[in-house]
Length: 355
Image: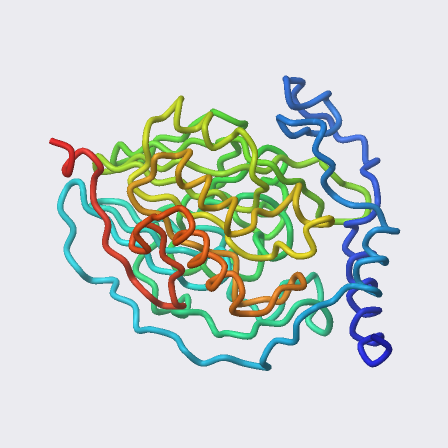
């Protein structure tokens, strides 16, 4: 491991600077609820430790066993943004990481946009992309709504949000405590939601923030002071879940019980090793398959893999592990697909096949 020491130390430095190992103490007031004491937010399962200590970060980064990734992989597919859609039909295009373009008959939604070279507060250090985006911001069709799951740098990339705002002026939806980051960049059309609150778009679509198991921090002293979550998008007689970053827990059954089976679930399958560090904040492919089953999802697609090396597994491990888990559960591999960057997949309504 001695030959890896400089890289490991730079990663430790990034974790320290970006505040991931320091406790929140800014004193901002937030609504008191069953998942907030007025100062910080909590997960539904408060026994699950998330946001590891500085000691744990150092232990992992200095003595971990990270698989080497290729410097760059060029295997993007050509997206299809122009296929006409009827009621009950949708398309999902994997851009990269947790960025998916979801198109409905009258609504286009972009999730956790990141088009920057690094997932970092700095241009000179931090996780660097190993694949280019599946499409540029300029090549995207007009975006109506941007949904942001939480404020970690690989999910709330402010440079990308500013560029999308300049191009399309969409509505931005964020969990409680995150609006200020966008407004500080001149983005005005921002809606903040608490868990189970929803936003109704002009075309009648409903977007609901749902609980997920994760955490938040943006600076040195704001740990857990902004909320995190996933989203259920109801549009054109379709239900789509975007899970953002999450560990596996009871929230997927809860979402299904409250909102019904999903026509499409967008689930993270990467950034899961080592399990002692990641289990309470990131799912592995086996847990993602279980989430797919909990949601009674007609189709699931994987995301949060293959772009930024955030954890120890190899660049192709999430895709291979997903295939193994689907086979172990005797599930059709067409039920849960790990998309290529730029790949567009058509989906339709659960009811249309059950009637």
